[in-house]
Amino acid sequence: MDYIKGEDSVFQDIQPHRYVNQYLHREPSSDDYIFLYQDGKALLEDIPDGATIPKYHTVHSLYPDCADNLIYLFSIDDHSFFMSFMQVQETANLHYQEIVPLGNLNPPWIAFAGATAYHLADWYDSHRYCGRCSLPMSHKENERAVQCPECGTVEYPKISPVIIVGVVDGDRLLLTKYATGSYRRYALIAGFMEIGETYEDAVRREVMEEVGLRVKNIQYYKSQPWGFSQSVLAGFFAELDGEQMVKIDAHELKEASWYSRENLPRDDTTLSLTWDMIEAFRASPSTARMRLP
Ligand SMILES: [Zn+2]
Image (cartoon, rainbow, N blue to C red; front, side):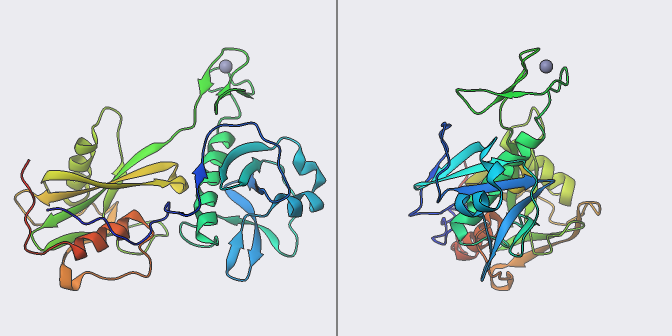
């Protein structure tokens, strides 16, 4: 079956804005953005429809020391984003807040910037010291990496691959709900890849672990950067192979059920890859069959 890639934007589709992640040396200018990171939270500025990343002129007027030790992250259009670990006093409309997936940041391209800044900031935060000899790391000049001045260990930004699987049985799609955590919406089978696996191995293993089913005809659909878990998500559709009785892993899931196209729930966002995939399944022709390899 060919799944039609949805025309709705997902999280990372920020066109006409342009994300530029080339590693550069830059000085902040007034309209650039400053991501002050502390213990998994960022200093965000309240705006009428949520929160946003504050600009350099705002941050610098309140905390002149912020100009020291800024780390350049990336640019979107002509705006550069920098981060700092400097801890500052909150004000009436500048608070340390969690970056909630698809939640509190506006406009949408700033939400993407926030997730991406969070991923980088969390990586810098956990790589302040050398894992081999525990001395403070220094920043490499010519690329985004930190290096130990003593033993020479170099660490590059870490991205953990995650697979998401839409398990299909004819006209039905398997939806799940997680047993724990704050995400309460319907989900698809998902999990981190293990070392030594291919994507297809991970798809088969996760489906077997979470719901006790075998799958075949695994087809790649689309990917999504997901800084909240330092990940990139790779979405696949796969066809049920054999037994359709679901045996859920109660540690991971509280629910896993088959939904026909007519009964698939709806959600107010398709910004996540999960919901983009659910909508792609809903829109795919119900009489089509998976193409055999
Ligand atoms: Zn070292």
